[in-house]
Length: 403
Ligand SMILES: *Cc1c(COP(=O)(O)O)cnc(C)c1O
Picture: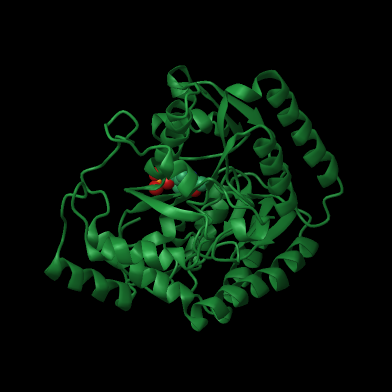
């Protein structure tokens, strides 16, 4: 589908038809398309310093971005490592976790991950995401990972406690068998995105983290998809009430303008890499590491995120989702497991041919992209109440047309 331009929450095609972008262009766009403040920040930065090698050199946009992020993060998360995209932010966390243990004199090669988890497309990310089935052709390339069920749930789910206990049981078994060989646990807190917007309770993540910590296992929170307001708080870990050892950020970081990623870690991890020689150094870098233009976009995006207006809008989106989606579920027996977290709403649509459903929605001016049987809405924060309510009306109409 050729798109000529985009504005706010809308994509515009060559015939000037407008489509509400309910996938936020693969979850990256948080403040709307062609957002002028971010666009201006990028332009100004291009005229000042477009790029410089980020080894033995540094620059103000990188420093500023870290300082601004620090004000939103727990005190313990104070060390920042730049890379280019969500996959590299995870790859960096995995490599750092492995080398952390090496640097303190231990060899730990195993990782613990969750069934359905998706963490990106590089080999390390594929290894910890094997159970997402996105990478089946590459299974032979992947390293060993232990998997735990993700206790996904929805309002009205009567078996949530049972699912959580079962998951904890599986995890405990792994820990009993090889806990001392596990370098880190990686998880998407509150929301497994690619697996089909599977949501879990904060206490489940908290329990899993506690168990990991009892076995000296490092904790990686992959907030590539959920960071920057998606779950209603700036970051999902705020609702879980734990501070991970690594926090992976990308997608929304530049407001959807440029690829950039950061892996944030603690002083304890950072300290294990210090030394007089290169032996303990984390030797990982990309040509465009900490690209100043990307950093400038991220600074502007963060400023927008912190504004009263955006914070109000995030609450409004949550409210509209909660007002609408459960009614939708009551109206149609084909709509199941309706659920929301912050600005994300999802349900299972038990009909064949969801592509046809998506096409119908598109012909009525909204873009959705079902994941299997899961229909979800994840709009940019600039969407208005009216626009989002209209989207629900379109979805109703399109479901009726499918019956
Ligand atoms: C999208 C995503 C990634 C990978 O990010 P890319 O920028 O596409 O490489 C990793 N983890 C999660 C949770 C994601 O949603």
